Length: 68
Picture 1 (cartoon, rainbow, N blue to C red):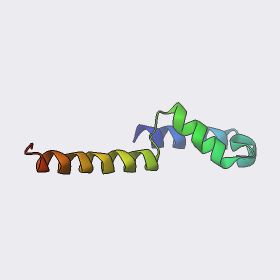
Picture 2 (tube, rainbow, N blue to C red; picture 1 turned 180 degrees about the vertical axis):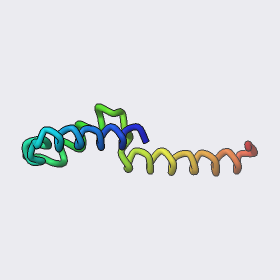
Picture 3 (tube, rainbow, N blue to C red; picture 1 turned 60 degrees about the vertical axis):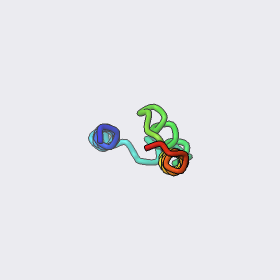
């Protein structure tokens, strides 16, 4: 949740300074989002999905091998 609040604060500050969105974000929206996400240490949805999927697979394997 901190990441979202930080992003809102960032946009609010830019709006208060009347900075155009295109100038604030730059020409590459995807690069802005990627760089911002990395700076906030936010995992992307694909990494999160893969981690959850791997955890489920590991649980099933452990269960079949007699673990918990």
